[in-house]
Length: 337
Image 1 (cartoon, helix red, strand yellow):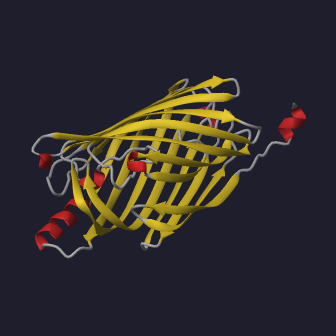
Image 2 (cartoon, helix red, strand yellow):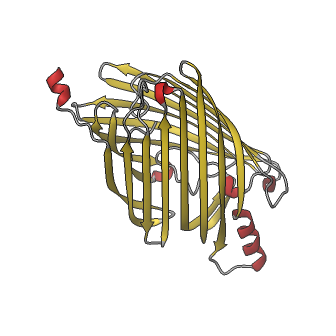
Image 3 (tube, helix red, strand yellow):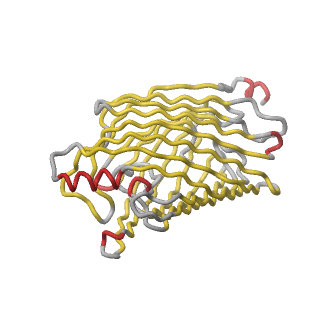
């Protein structure tokens, strides 16, 4: 067994190209890179640093950098992310207010996010988070000036938010869990929206659990996202569901559930099969106080290749089919959840 373990991979850095075929952004190429740092003394997981960038034929580009730090003996966790987006998109409306024909618009935005959590007792963390995001949108259509102005005002703006975090994490590994439970609860309280002059709020809850079945794993994830108050559309929430069009399904609330089976073929190769559904709701003041919702089902398969056995650091490809036969492909580090 010792000799077998010594032959398993232990890569700490990986980068790979990502083909882009997105209904909203067009066709292009991205690059995804991740680095695993050595574990801090007594820590059960490594710190990680990442970079993602892409560019497509619609003259759309983005770049995101991030770092998640696990301190000695798991006493603290912290994270930092920042990103820049310059996108040319097709706007199809939102749940409850779909347009008969997509319109073209451009958006230029940035964000900075940070969080810190302190371990209170074994597996239980409390913390705070902060977010700044802002940008401008431009409607690239010949239309009534009043409509153009209203659209750009609704889709542009900046906000800062502060909130609280609570995490219970008994997973045996953060990058490729085979056993345990993870619960994340968070709030974000935004400053006043420039259009309404009123503050608004975001509540998030996520639960995932993992059950070993021999060398295989059965896992599920449940997510809820809720915006409270009169929320500007550029802060609407979207599903984290493979196969769902992030640019099309936006609303004031999202609820979703997924189940996944992870099958180990060899020491290095494994596969996944998954299915789930998301409900996107839009309780918007422009809908005459009526609540509109839409359900998006999704299912798919994927494959994984192990890059670091100790940290269960892998690269994977998923293919998912969702509503109206929409097929999406994902190249990722680690598992989807």
